[in-house]
Image (cartoon, rainbow over all chains, first blue to last red):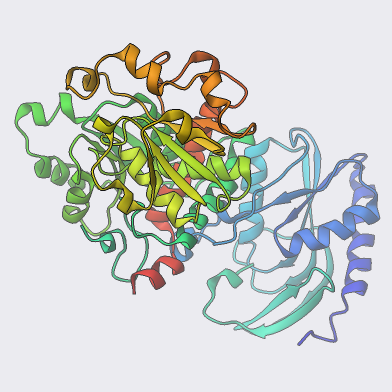
Length: 176
Length: 326
């Protein structure tokens, strides 16, 4: 069941205004946006339109860059990453749905840098939860929440999008 | 030979030795995974870190520059370390047995053998004797199988034609000695191609080939009539001296693919060849370099398909294979 306390449209508004503020603070004039498959791509589609960015949206599937590949193996539904612009020297807004351990973002940064060296990367997430395992953190957040161990948060969608808080099962892919 | 040798005790795809007996789902999975690897070539750094720290040994007992190169490139794009061993000119010529060679390489903590051998069953033999942590990929054994070539051809056909199921496919040439033909017949049947034809002279047609679910043609014009895909096979020069064929010229006159012959096929038919091509023997240059030829696309696709197979056997947790082997 979707969690009533997590209103998607409120979170999107909040993340959008955080992004606008950071874009102004950092003086980004022509950034590109990349969404991380799958939930991050749904969020990024909306924000990309709201911010009126010039270049088409980029999509990243970080499956080949996960550090737990040796334990979980190949995801059966790997999508191709599509970056329809040159990353080299560009300001990148990276979008994901949930920031948890930081490992997804680490993998995403590794993959982005294999396409080229961006000038800056600004990380925006809809939700930041506790449980960070590596020293990375988002720049712009829709909402921060605390969850007890063993619980996970999942975005379903794309239409309509909803956030669900669940008891984590044995699926190690839940690490986000 | 049991196909179950390809799966470990938990049903995970451990070796890739033959197409025979694999499921449609698994073949589609390989093609889907290859599709996602295609984007790696668009990166500035054309590598993904999936097999970092792994060592792949190309064990080639038979020369094949192109196959070895594409396997090598595939392994390197997965960030594996690659060792190329041309066994014909090294260990065995010093009298070292095959199993001694394998044991020595195992002691060097390698993770995968890519095996090319002139004897049918060689890859299976090695797979039966390797340490449990090692995977074996068959890069062509005798007349038996060349499963990654078949998969890259299926991938190429799917990329261009969309769906394999409605297609009529003709495989033309030396069917008798061709491991490529055998693997492709299995793959096309598993993927449900509408019709699989084999076309060639009687001397190069195995007895009972119909049992594999193909239609046999000895006449090229009839065999090409209305097909969507033409797969030309390489003619080994030694067949000329082996009483299989009277002469190169006569072979080309009867079975060489020319523009006029290709006109028998559908107008949008594609022409494939596992390479290297013998121009003027099995295929005319104007066809090999013509607009219907996808021979170079096959080469490019070979890297992505081999990346998919290598990543799946080395690390892939394969639920479909598990269900299949149960």
